[in-house]
Image (tube, rainbow over all chains, first blue to last red; front, side, top):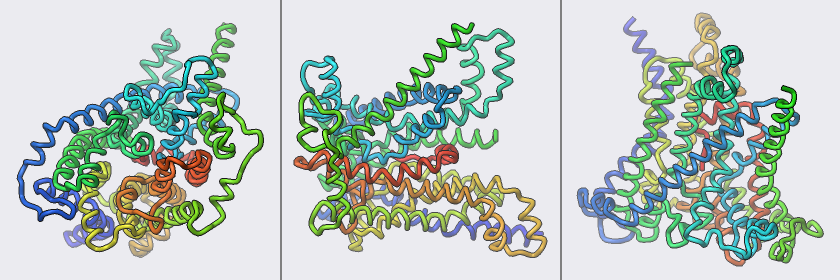
Length: 295
Length: 281
């Protein structure tokens, strides 16, 4: 019997081997290497790396540029994901109602989601363009603005324009999950609530929300993880400008490594960012395991 | 009561209409830009529909000419296809046995969740050492390097999604085959995989979408038409000051056709993939 158990274990690990080899080689090992680099003064093409201990981290934490970009990234994450949650819920509920053309409307929801991130960013960059651009055209011709504005060139509003582009593309993700989750809420729960005299709002709060809470929380945490990593959308829409007002944490790492060629301190920023992401990921894995157990 | 009901109906249809307009308007404008002549796009008041449809950009992009924009676009398309297909194939090949192992053998849950967690970390945590290695091996600006790197994103995702799908293949059929003396590989190849075939297809398409969309690694590890993928090329086009809006829009439309087709095809299975983390952006 012991032999049989060992045989089974061997099989289980044997089947895992190709995946583990790739994961260790191109994920786990680079991560360890990044941690090591972050403790050195490594540069691209400069002096040989020297051990500097936690110096890079100490410098990173007090760096104003890093602190500001962290604040900006959090602002972007909270506002984007918040709006995506609200619109995702509303549109998910709407598309769950019976109406003519529902299949078409549901298919439309897939379009922004499937659009490549870079194409979405480019599209909104053109819409927000200063001298022409559809947003200026629309607002000017409907009399809402007197003259064309530079939406992405204005430090007071640029990040909101990036948020708008991000929300347009990503709220469908939340809506799709809400829509699927709604199918699993038993109809008789609504009936029972109705018989108890519950109005639409009470039914929503006490039947719908608890019924879709699990998938909804997974969706929100996933979106939060993704939003915190944002890079592509900013790279294409604003390159971090104007005056750094849309510069996220990922850009600090990018500039440190590939503009200033300081690999060591770039690695420290990367590890700090990864640590913050890891907290969110822990929440995701926790929710996922909870759902697994329920299913 | 009927009055309230019709009010509800009117409100619902108004909301649906608003949703459709807000979803389609930006995409519609992208298309209009791609078929308008430059003068119409810079006119004030803005011309919302061109006097005559001008498909010359599509023609320019799709007919290969050395040194022209079509070379940049078509080479990027080729690189994107090559990298996405190859990375998807490799990660499926490694994910199938791994997912089977996680699904059928008790234990090793820590490895499973560890893998999922590792891949959700931001790319910046892995990008620097791999850059240094690829650079010292002379493998930067090489589409094949991207394939290996993309496996780190695709493999945990495909493993997780396939594991969830293998969980639904009934164990009894496999056990019956085992009693009949079939080997493990026979069982996987002849029973589990055929039963999970739709899920295999959906997972592969999801993986393809993720590779097609990837930007960060491609931006850092490639620098000319030999290896640049579509997202990087689009970013280049968008950054060029003098470039024609219509041309950039046409590139965007062409680059979106494959993922949008796949998205519509995946509609039914979308949600299982989405909760498994099948999103990039």
